[in-house]
Length: 609
Image 1 (cartoon, rainbow, N blue to C red):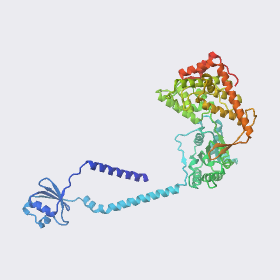
Image 2: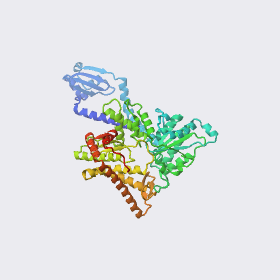
Image 3: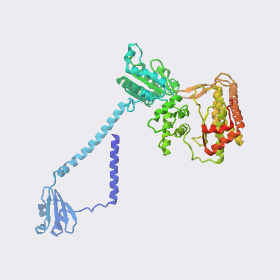
Image 4: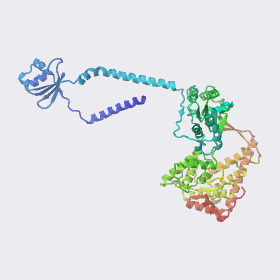
């Protein structure tokens, strides 16, 4: 309503402004002269009046020179009688054309009622607007504690067949669908109804999609809300909204209530920040009460999603609440291929396209990343004016998702281009020559994101475990660019700064976290989680200063060993390094097959890292 009033006021203001502008440029017609009755009689006697038109008490006068004038007569007295009493000459009056116009009924009543009713109407509208505004405010006050619960309309119904991968997760959730469809067979056997199911997994792995698939398979109402919508700055609102959300779901039972990002209110209590009356804790307490308050035969399933299960309050995870936990992992190679096929529907692909090769290049991608990849591939194809999405466009889309768009407009000198070519060539050559390293998929000196160039090496199959030798091979590859610059130019550039940072971090993890150093199978440092921020911010130092020095020495040894390995390879294969660098300066990009084709004449064999 407030918007309507604003629009009306803006409309009135606009009309006023337009009127003022037009009035400034358009001159008004000259106003007729107003005559008294005595002046009218004098002009009639002088023969200067051509006609007089009577309309009620108003007189419209036309003079012999063509000008006009107006006057008024007495009410309830005729014009002839009035003029006669004022001494008009009868002969002169005969030359005047006298006409009388009847006043219309509408005009009569308008003149009678408008002066009386218009103020009353204006006052009535004013009070109506005030009461309407007050009523709206009262409704908002009463609805403040209601949840913003949304009901899915199933316009785009999702089934389990629409969710690629996640085989184990779907098998776990099929039981939920069966319960919602046939609860009697469970209750007859005395089985306890599952009340809460927690979907856990990294961002983009399909937690919300799986929840929608459960609702689609079971065909029951699907209510969804974000946990952050429960919490307001006013104490008690979150608890009220929680009660309303659960009550709404119970009324629609059998139903599914989906709470997304439950860690927004479900973080562990008693962390020392915020008191017992903290609004977030009040909301969490109400969720715990509602989960306990379910009757044995209440057919409402609460699904919740989070990517940080480690920071949730233990009371939320105890049996009877969210005691079923479904883990959604990042997709493996076969799952990525299946996901790519689903997101390829509706897109025009070239006949020779191989989504398996795209899946090989995307380890660590989530389902959302793969959907973004296919969309980026379509955008790149359209930008190039092509009609079919090809393999090249999908490969480029994968690199764009990982590293960002190409920066071909970035102007660099020939010297910087040469340094970048030898830097990336050093990375690629060490990766090709060292044992236990992943194969090189692509080498480029075209800038992407903040990287001046990049060497893409990816495993041929998914790896869930990594050995010490594989880490040592990664370290040698990371130092390949730095070593290549030093051997070729006798100097190093800032282009290796990120490589050195990543290598140092990996070497320290080998010592402190993985127990792969000479210090033996021991870890150092205890990481503490900050439950309100949801990330690691402090590490407790549980070792002595002497041990800290030994840790630093072990880190230095790992880095020194990696440098020696890279240096030995690059010194041994200087001609191969020059060939790769020269080709990169000419073509700027080498695919994996082209790169290994360049190395064939040099017969490079992997060596121990």
